[in-house]
Image (cartoon, rainbow, N blue to C red; front, side):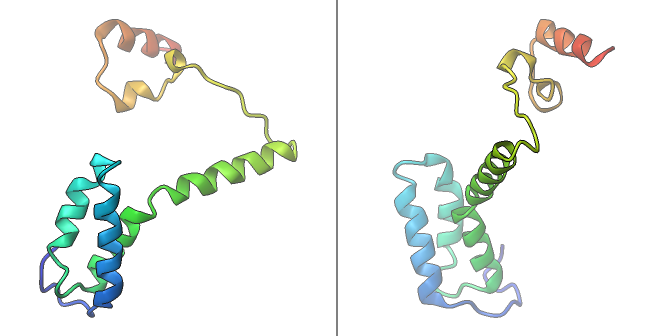
Length: 113
């Protein structure tokens, strides 16, 4: 993000309100601090790009809630059956986390190799 990114200017009052909300949330959610700090640099002249970034940070969890309610609905209608998968059998871990050798080999075996 740059101060002058050639984009149309956003509503300064709305942007300040959004970033102010983010700064307030950092008291309970320190993982937001970097984003809030970066976005607060553009308080004087925010563009649509800055507004979009601030909005996506504020509402990033809403997509998870939409997914939760959508899954709950299809399960209640008996279209799908959700089954709990314990942490030790989460096969995706092999692709997303640094694992000890024993854990890596265990998951690799479960994948069929």
